[in-house]
Length: 191
Image 1 (cartoon, rainbow, N blue to C red):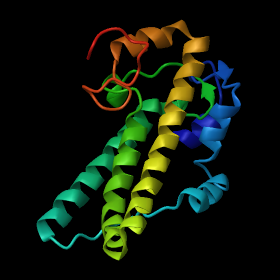
Image 2: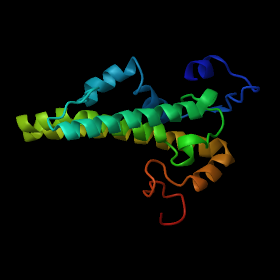
Image 3: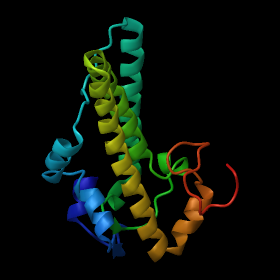
């Protein structure tokens, strides 16, 4: 989907670019997450994540790796839901189906939760080495998560500035990341 969406833009396919994020912060936040720039970001922020984390307790190992697989399946479903509108830094229309009917940034949530799970054994080992090493490991994963929060905020600012439909979508899908937790003070209500 992403490849075709990036290579083929068509009104008939419903993925015509309507606008491009004009901000340096938006571009910076997005580019820092992709090659080759993420190599530099990884050097600056560190990356204590294991692709297949190993936990000493067999039950915990199975449960957390099953959760990791579930998160990757949800991430994939979010990518499929975007369809040919998938892109970075461009507005190709509002997607409100699949996981996007529940939270506004399901792919970012799943990716970050997977990183936290993948980092747990590495960070625990770092804490065994020293308190400072452990705290630096936690800070590394937190910094990556904050980078994705910045991406979400800049994307939403871009969409709000160019498409009145986004405000209606945000009012309907009230939660940016986790149902029950509101991060957007512009929305009314206490949910």
